[in-house]
Length: 225
Image (tube, rainbow, N blue to C red; front, side, top):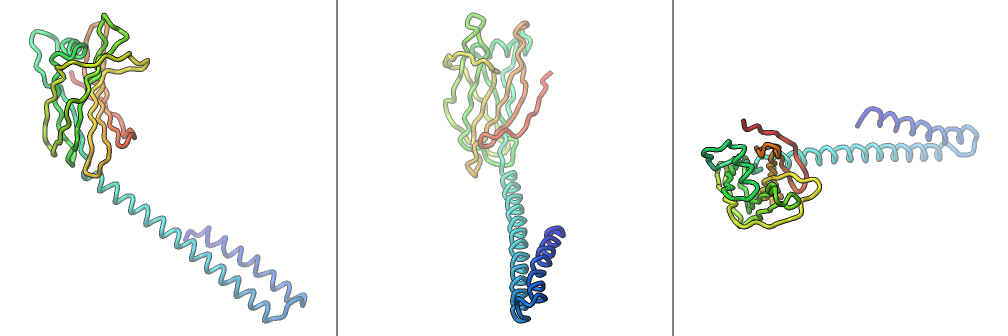
């Protein structure tokens, strides 16, 4: 028990103990009644100390259990990281990627499980760059199949298929999204954004971040020079 809590209980005991003593001195109660009241106050004080101490122990136990649970989860967390798999010929890689993201033609990316656990039901999607002829429309390439990736496993996904047209949201960033689960059925998402230079028609990998059950874990910016 913390010292300040113990001191408060002592102060309360002294204050309430003064009442039967005053009553005894003013002859309103006898000595036996005063002793019984003091014993009752002592019992209440001891019970209070026990209750507070029990709550503190329970809180510490719950905190330790949460820490152990979080550590166990982290030991089996899959982390899918993406890289550009296609090889470019005759064009600047950033120019090639920009054109690929506009149409999906040649859009091949490779994911690797760099985490410590198996990625289950991994599904891969791509939000592209608006075409110059349709600046308010974006192509979305939805997942076509789900895959499982063991630790250290790699998979290539080819988005060279017909996408779906959507109105471009006000705040929009072309990106790759990967949704998967771990062995504890937590929903994990890897979001790899693209940095777009529309004026020069160039694109490169930008910000990378992860979510677990909808909660964003952090950010990391990867440079591909």
